[in-house]
Length: 259
Ligand SMILES: C[S@@+](CC[C@H](N)C(=O)[O-])C[C@H]1O[C@@H](n2cnc3c(N)ncnc32)[C@H](O)[C@@H]1O
Image (cartoon, rainbow, N blue to C red; front, side, top):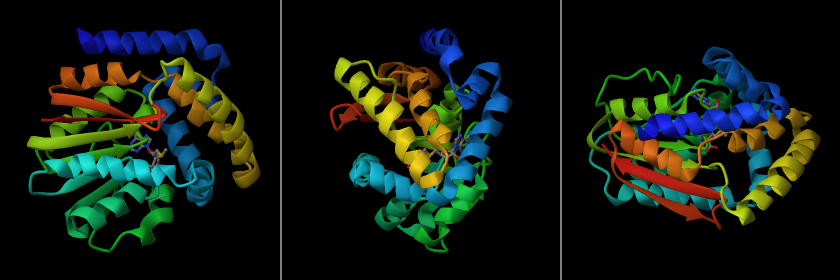
């Protein structure tokens, strides 16, 4: 079965590398609950400096990537509410609110402090909820669209997050994922090595005093699915018309599909 194949190869990769992994990533190997708690605590911890670091390290590229994600979403978005899962400090949710109307947007994240840090970016009519992307607090078929920006690779079981996206979408609903997938091309592997294992932890340590947390971001890419494995997992979960597009030479990618 393609999904099992995708997860199996991802966990095989993680097991082989586990001796070199940071505690947060090792916890994913050790079990979902420990992983979730470690990741949530880490994001709560870095929430005060998350935005500043994003701006410094991406030089605005992350904004362009989020815009591209919303272009894809709104190309054929049915009427109805839209969920931004793993919403963090609400950059994507705020852009979404401007694009489709704040009252249509619901944003969730399991790290309360991340949502709190971004609260002022969205109007009061955007609903914010603390919630786990692997067990979303919504009835089946609640949303016309769903986005997830740089969140899926943090999940203890990404396939559960994909299944939840499929469950909460109404038939015809669109799911758009913006993510750093496990790099497969030599050029992106080199970029990830220099940026993710060098620059990111270094600047993270200087700005937030927490180089380890920023080291995690790079480790989490290496321990994640490739773009093609993720697309396969989406198709296996029942999404149709699954498509993908690389952004900025494949540093990040968009994947989307329809229920
Ligand atoms: C790298 S941040 C991305 C935030 C935001 N979407 C953005 O584009 O800047 C990842 C977010 O995913 C959240 N997250 C990780 N695992 C989660 C889970 N199982 N359920 C809900 N949120 C989760 C973290 O708390 C964090 O805020």
